Image (cartoon, rainbow, N blue to C red; front, side, top):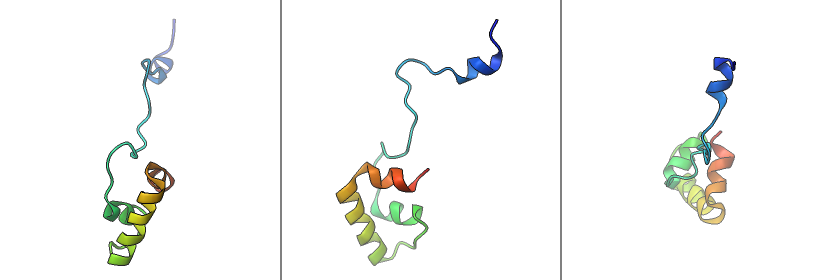
Length: 63
């Protein structure tokens, strides 16, 4: 007989954890997630980061 604890850790086939990077992010969102104010300079930097790195920019920032 299995314990309830092991039942709660089993994942269905094909299950993938959500990282947050699979959904669209605006540069303003990335700037704020990095703890910065959404100033024009921070938004421009975040946009460049998203354009260059894509979802990896989110994965580095959002745990």
